[in-house]
Image (tube, rainbow, N blue to C red; front, side, top):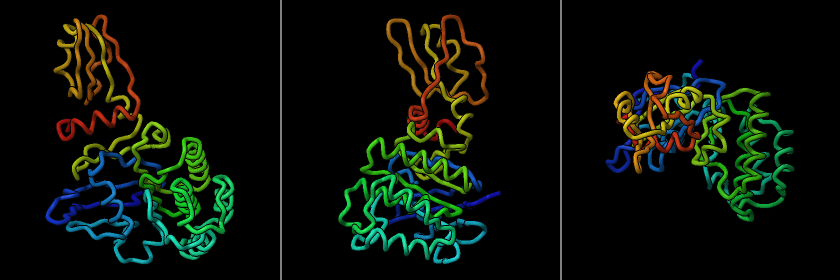
Length: 289
């Protein structure tokens, strides 16, 4: 089933094309990575899905309804950005009470557990919090909302590694208990990529890839070995990067059809981490298509 349908969506701001005729869908009840460089259009599309912005052309449907200025849709979508999510003069306790009234699937027990987990004082105002604590409040609202569609756009700014680890673990456990569509945009890809069932990679407002995580790991990898052997096979791939030194080299390849199941003599296939895969794919851009 489809949770979010994106049909011919473009967005222009001051004459600049931010999103360029996007056509794809986010399936329901999956945790997916929505990845790309800064300025690629990720946040713009997430704002459209969340009903904050309208597209210039095309249409987004959330559960078959248009989200912009649609209260029925907005209560089913929780969008947590990297900052400025909440009124600065509002106390945490007031925010949680407001959220409970707004989100129909809100879970108070989860919210209380997360306040304890992140050592948050509910009597404090948002403006009194450190950046990391403010992010922890955003994470608390995002998970506790249990919205059918929850969007996290770099939600952990200021949170230390231990707090981020707690967030990922709690998010996964709660998702396992109550599956929903979670769209996650992040630059700390290796930290959270194990959660992703699928990744969507966007570049310059266009979708480069829409692919299962395991399949992407199989398609993008490194081959090391003698330069003369690498030269014999490199035309069989899309080369994302290559480097050579004193007769040996390494090529990073995008293997469209799993051509090379066996390596040439003295060559070795090496697995890349997800962070490196995304960097190489976005650097190559539309040339991989």
